[in-house]
Amino acid sequence: MLPDKIKFGTDGWRAIIALDFTVYNVARVAQAQAEWLLQQDNKPVVVVGHDCRFGGELFTETVTKVFCSNGVKVLLAKGYVSTPMISMAVLHLKAHQGTVITASHNPPTYNGYKLKGAHGGPSSPKDIAEVEALIKDDVTIPAQGLIHWEQQGLLEYVDLEQLYIDYLQQKFDFAALNKSPFKIAYDAMFGSGQNVLRRLLPNAVLLHCDENPGFHGQAPEPLDRNLQELAKTMATTPELKIGLATDGDADRIGMYDEDGHFVDAHNIILLLIHYLHKYKGLMGKVVIAFSVTDRVKKLCEAYGLPVEVTAIGFKYISEIMIKEDVLVGGEESGGIAVKGHIPERDGIYDGILLYEFMTKSGKTLKQLCEEVYEITGRFVYDRNDLHVENEKKNAIMAKAQNNEYPKFGKYTFNRRETIDGIKYHLDNGGWLMLRASGTEPVLRVYAEGNSKEETLDILNAVKATIL
Image 1 (cartoon, rainbow, N blue to C red):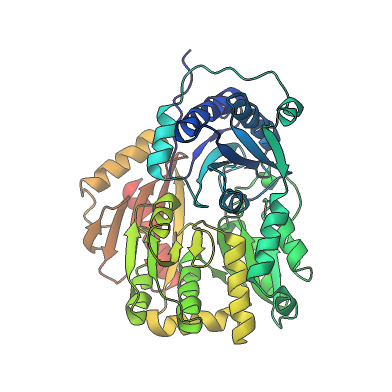
Image 2 (cartoon, helix red, strand yellow; image 1 turned 90 degrees about the horizontal axis):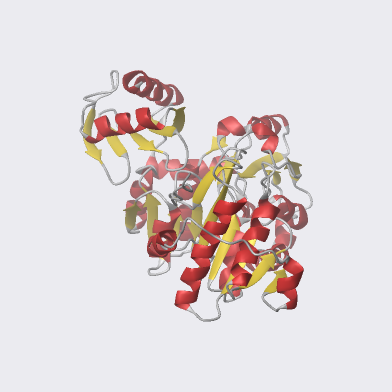
């Protein structure tokens, strides 16, 4: 039987543990990456780490052994780390690339393999494609253990969590934040960001900040439906004014206001633009993925900021950030980067930045959202992840591509966009979008309406039309 074809998606290669994500297949990818690195430099250095998922240490050890056997020096993280910790370390330690064993927000049965560039963000689509092209069917996994490679000078251990915390302490006034009148709650979703807030904001209320490689059976994605314990905690604890959640590898963000209402990525992007430009006087382009609300364009028009829309995948945003002056770059999925930090998604950094915004302005998250709505108008966004077999998923997308859906229930549209998936601009002023997941048998349906009821009605109309 031939080995599986390994394909990198929007953000790395992800597969089900023990089915396709095996030690052997991980070694195949590591060997390809090692060969690619040696084409770039004769003495490459790579930062390597894993998040809290099952098998992370085993897979990371495999990657390390393959790298070292090829003469690639490894800076190996102690314990679990977040993806932003790896990206920041690649930049600060002047490494050539970074490797993170993580499946990010995917269900607990998955693990994954992310590549990080020397600039401190996702490797470019070009570099990823070149690594992918070098993946061979056969690989030899070295028998020597890590002690051998450490003795050979090809392996060095680094404390990336401490490096990251030291960096954050240079960026933010934690003495002031720890005296903030607004108390914060943090839900790590059993992910790799769990120690950072515990150490930097000791007064925070912590949820799911312990190791659970199975994430208690739930995908660690910071969506409202996955964060109901945090929502209830916010709604029933009067002193709490901001709720922060990050995903499995802590590069995505979700938030709650003091009433326990979810503040999604669209609103977070708007808030970050509002703070950095109006309050801090910073300029720069705003770069958003195709699935982000058009309200961003409305806010940027009011502030005189240019906007660029990319295909979905933070690597496309990061590419622009390293070449141009970008104020905020963000995705609907909660991956957001800001000026003054690395060109990488970082849920913890973004959350602390908005906590600083509240503390300095003396306004709650709810009040700050109202400031934004004065410019953009109110809107309600939601998303359905429809679990359908790949054949059915592809058939639906083919019909959408061929414009075979004239309307969705009572909802008609006036134009379509096809940058990445199919986006329909509705006659009621909202929009909906269809896009197939690149890593799971999932069809994503995105919708924005003028009220919660309308948005849910749009999602139901789409489901009834396409299934």
